[in-house]
Length: 220
Image (cartoon, rainbow, N blue to C red; front, side):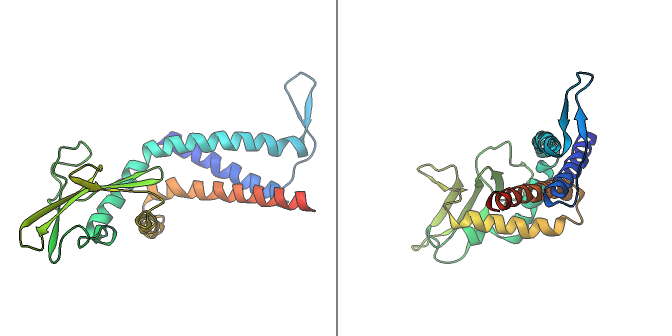
């Protein structure tokens, strides 16, 4: 945790420094000597480049540490919220898979190390991946003829509906909106959420500042 906090502070500090330099609210003067070699950089030209390289390395390091330290807990918070909200019913149409009336949700029927054995019988597993959102759960009820029916969502197979949503699916963007609405509130009352996202937001602010300033200077 100390490593995450240290890199976090450095990342935010450098991000703000770059924003100041590229917007003109901060400046440097003089030269930057390289040890006792007698060589020095012109600070106004070299410092922004040096800071940018260090900043990118810090950002990558923070991303790795934060994904290890913070993401599992954040995923668990989102998982709990999704199960409490019944959000899954908005993503996967029970009517389209054969339920004309009442139906219920049941836990994934196969052994899975990611799904707690003590989870509730209506537990929906939700996994956040790179450009994908994955679900594992089942619907149960009666079909049009009154016969019992189970429909499983998970890794697509002959007896399993596709439980993965990608950017090509509208449901994927609904998931992102659901997460965003939940996490915006948690930024202020859950330390790990703020610790994970706020440095990224400030770093992306630095990216936009650098891009806009670079484009503006190339035009004028």
